[in-house]
Image 1: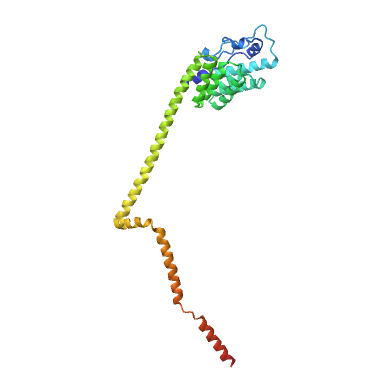
Image 2 (image 1 turned 60 degrees about the vertical axis):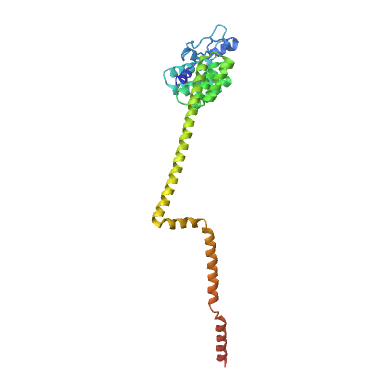
Length: 280
């Protein structure tokens, strides 16, 4: 929980800092620039909102509006009004859809609001468009993955940060350790669940065997052991007995037919004599 809250910190750097970095190639690699992950500052980046230098071109109207909306989102986030923060960040993204800082902050707002899947979606977008080496995007992605219980994937992201970007990043170190611990606990819980289900199945099997045994004993008490034994012995020969019964039934039917005299010829002869007598 502590790790997730730390990764929910927002970037309060001005959007114009990205404009500055477009003109200053060194700013994206400077660990003291406006994109510094707020995790390193206990969740808050105290950089002024409009921190532009003398060489920065004047902001256009849409950029000013974007920065205002972001500032509103940051204020809502700090006050705990996460739905309002999400709306403000989204309005700013409507003006600047590929802004990695806005996507990062919106992901944090979704995560703080309990919308884990949406947080993951925004974090993935952030990683796709962010400048190379921006650690915050990766830690945001890992936090969203971890919140969904995908500890193995989150650990992989933290490992990438430590191996390829910043080997001394404390957030990534703590995140990796936390994910490994939670993954181990999750595996242990799954093993316990498997054992519990197997024990339940074994109990059900034993219960069926017990009931079957009780039924057999009750039948022996009612019919006597010899009768019950005979019934059990005949179970396997039921099909053969049925065939024999059918055969003897057919034999009996044929025998009965032979016993019945055929008087139809005599009847015809008698009717012929009567007709002759009538003609005379």
